[in-house]
Image (cartoon, rainbow, N blue to C red; front, side, top):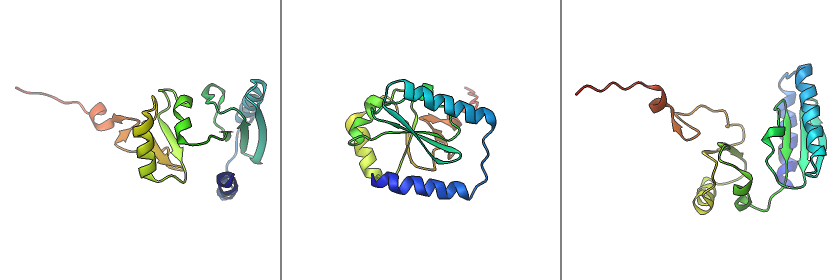
Amino acid sequence: GAAQDRFWPALSRALLERSIDLGPADIVNKVVTADALAIEGVGARIADVHPTVTRVWLERPTLRDDLHCGAGLFHETRIGGLDELPPLLPRKVQTVAHHGFAPSDLKQFLLRTRPAGIDRLVPVGSALDFEPRWDGIDLFEAFVRRVTVR
């Protein structure tokens, strides 16, 4: 689709600006993981867009974090709209990176669907940005010792 036609070339351009070398273990883990997805029967098709990036197209939308090793491995699928996300995202999914959605649309989505997971919806490229409230936890509250004197 149109998003793919913009995203993958933009990622390839960004990677060309950086010197990223994967170690042999990362390369092997990525190949083994991509192959395991293909064997799983989720309609996986494997394509490389850059030496460090491997795309695995999943015909059936699914979240298989147990078959994801990082190292430039992307799971890719197509859904009809945001309302199809909640069944794919268990409670342990904390951050969803998005592109092309207005914050008001994302807020309406959360109010309408009340997904079990999702503590943060952030633009692509911001998933690791540090914030005082991280994945639903107030870090200042969690890491500061309070002493009470009465």
